Image 1 (cartoon, rainbow over the protein chains, first blue to last red):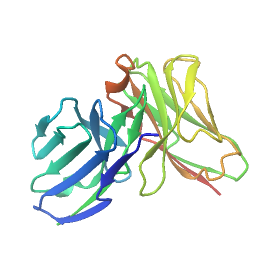
Image 2 (tube, chains in turn purple, orange):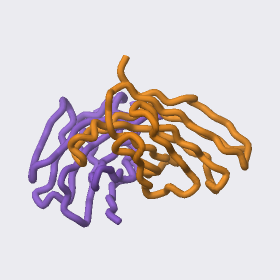
Image 3 (cartoon, each protein chain N blue to C red):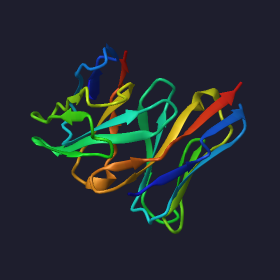
Image 4 (cartoon, rainbow over the protein chains, first blue to last red):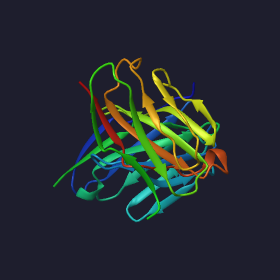
Length: 109
Length: 115
């Protein structure tokens, strides 16, 4: 079945440093969603990308969908301790979603 | 308050016992989902339902069962056939009208520990 690879698995950064996580698929995607899960919490929807080459921003977060619609990235500028958590990408199948393995971000103050 | 509720937050059971996890939503969503999350892992789909009285197996349905008798409720039973049931269980819902582009809303989860 369809698989989604997400890298890196873990990332420790010093507060103020940037952070990027990547999501890669072997097949062309119709769309991609990003979720954030705080430690001990549940995933919360961040954004959805649909168009080839699409770039969306939410404050310090920048989301990008690859031109070939096979990969996506989430970039956080100047991380803060509130950014701690696991970031998941999710791609859609027929009425269901396949989640990436996630990137766990730890921000050191 | 609109949202998804799961109860209980923590659940302990003895090996060999069936246990049912509750999931209720008042968002008027058609679609509901159950995921399993193991420590440091992603989410794996157990079962999903697009409409009342209908549901489909996900990637790891063995040892689990569900029902969808009401639109707002989608309980998950972890049976004794599930070989490694200790995990964090997440319920989610979505509008279900646009199929693959809906946003999923997650409940707070139930952490099940089998002793």
